[in-house]
Amino acid sequence: MTEWKARRFWKEATVAPCDGGWQVLLDGRPVLTPGKQPLRLPSHQLAEAVAAEWEAQGEVIAPLSMPLTRAANSAIEKVAPQFDAVADMLASYGATDLLCYRATAPAELVQAQAQAWDPLIDWAQDRYGIELTVTQGVMPVTQPAPTLAALRARLDPLTPFQLTGLHDLVTLPGSLILGLAVYEGRLDAEQAHGLARVDEDYQSSVWGADAEAASSAAGRLQAMRDAERLLQLLRG
Image (cartoon, rainbow, N blue to C red; front, side, top):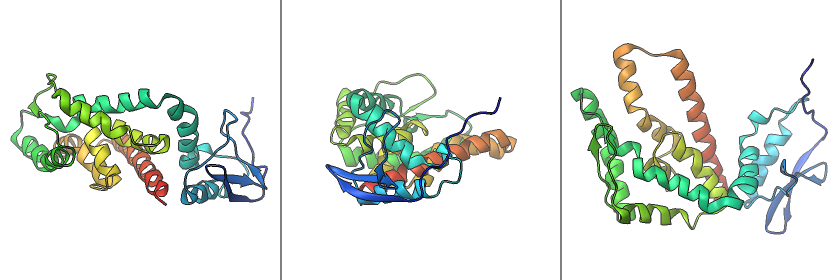
């Protein structure tokens, strides 16, 4: 049986202002989310970029080629209705942040982690007025309660769209600090991805590259770039 695929039904994708933001129109009809909610976008730049994704579609619609549209759908249908739960989940990465867990050996890896991660630990402590406990090994370490509270509070002022953009920047590298550093402009997505791969890069230098792992890493990097672009477009 041939799999059914959605096909292009419009000639032109445009944008127009609407109550509370901007909307994308397909031949004059507003785009809706999969759950039939208005796809209301908070910035003109984001609306233009989403419209460009629709305009670029061929005869068969390829959802994976529309990361901004998918992110907007998630912000409206998933993040907005459960903002606190999503913020709590992202904040929980601060309790087990990748940057706080260091290797005990070999010396080359210990040094590589310190050189890559210590500047971000220092930045976060200065930026948010917190203390982060760094440990060696895999045994869990408890971060100070005021630190976790301050990191969680940093997420409260965000909009559902901003929290959506932050999501992949935190969950993919496994670090709230890296995600916030990209959000704050301290790093870009590629730098954050590279910092999250210190261990993997060391292993590759010792044992050689793995094609499957490299492909997976490339996918994570692209998702982080898409998330960073969403955040940039929200500022427009």
